[in-house]
Image 1 (cartoon, rainbow, N blue to C red):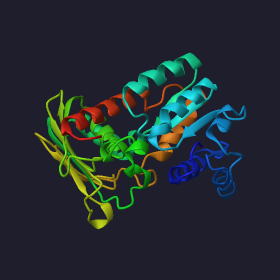
Image 2: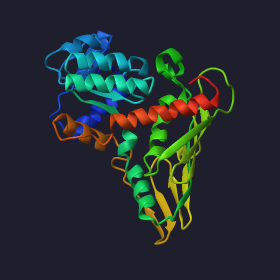
Image 3: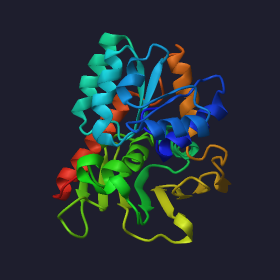
Length: 314
């Protein structure tokens, strides 16, 4: 683990649950913090610098769990040292960075995997299956609500460290969901409510799908939510509709097969277990990951387009 923060703790616990045979170690620019993490979370080893971990021959792969501004540099250094890389989302600051990384990974004969857990969320699979089944008829509208109030943004409030605003750092999850419904996004336009200066905290992104539907994503880090963050989203077609809790708790379908409820799955509602099962299998030679670099490039390009159109800083 390169970086000792909350996400490192989450990933360490998830990996231990998925495959206890994987040995986890910790690296930080603060040696005391890395040592503390190793003691607290049963790390095999620890290092007081990222580079020391990257070049250590006992390391097979690094998981880049640092702020985004460091992702590209650490990924390239790890590939140069012959390591596989798992990099947190958003993977890199620019979609074109994916091309650079992909070329380096091919040259090194190593894998670069992007930790986009929404690719593995049960909700994503359920919505894609419903649309493909024809139960809704021809889809006309996709409307997703992803609103919350991020009171303590930490480094995410620092443009030089975060690399972008709310849509870049957190909204990329939801952009991925909009792009993984079995529909092809042809164009995205962004609208920025509120002040036009500084890091963006709210965005309305409008998607035009090649197949005909229109989509909207209401994303914000400055709007207090109700019911502890629970909110409803909807997909409407010519023969039915789907109303779903945005995070994936429950789905209600009214379509050609009548009305029914679907519970996508609580055990792995965020998709992290499925993601690490896939990643560990890929690193052991199982084939291609479900979350590919091509999808990471697409997601970043969509965020870039939405941000450019909104007329403000990313």
